[in-house]
Image 1 (cartoon, rainbow, N blue to C red):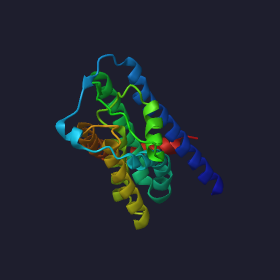
Image 2: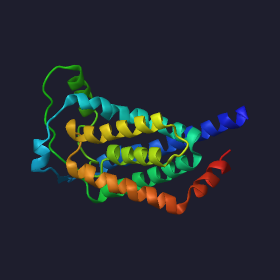
Image 3: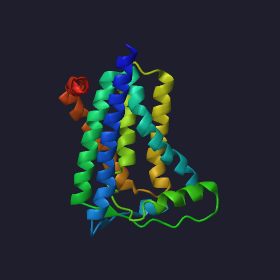
Image 4: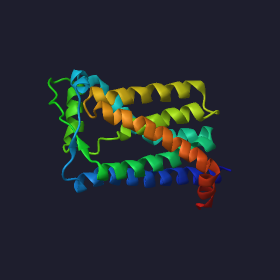
Length: 215
């Protein structure tokens, strides 16, 4: 029993690594291929204040991205399967959009010397080109986190609330730390929802058959 559990955890980890590689190729790879991105932004975006403290929920997204798969695996295997399939669909679709309709926007220079501003500058320094914006992967994947939490019947209420609250904070944070504009968020959420329902139409058992096939 213990050996099977370790084997399954290894498979979950390997699947995550595989998808993370695909996601990294989608986000960073397209940045090297894009030459003339379309400029985005609106008057409403200009009115949204820069709130550096929101960089912390923005960064927490990376923790959620890693941990949620193990949480779902332990509490709801069917939901885990739907999550992985919809995540794959979101990544591939986003990559196509980034290549076909590359976008960028003007990002303000953060002022101040607080710790949160320093973290923002650090994030900015690793994202200098400001590309692969629409749809926002932070927002689309956070929406998948929320859908997974709502759908997972075996997930304890306190975990559901933690996942949902932090995911909502992540979505809001993307515009408050000026990593995205509103249209990036608006396009990301329906993409995640559509991908989720496509995964449901395919069926969790399809993925689980592949999961059980892995040795």
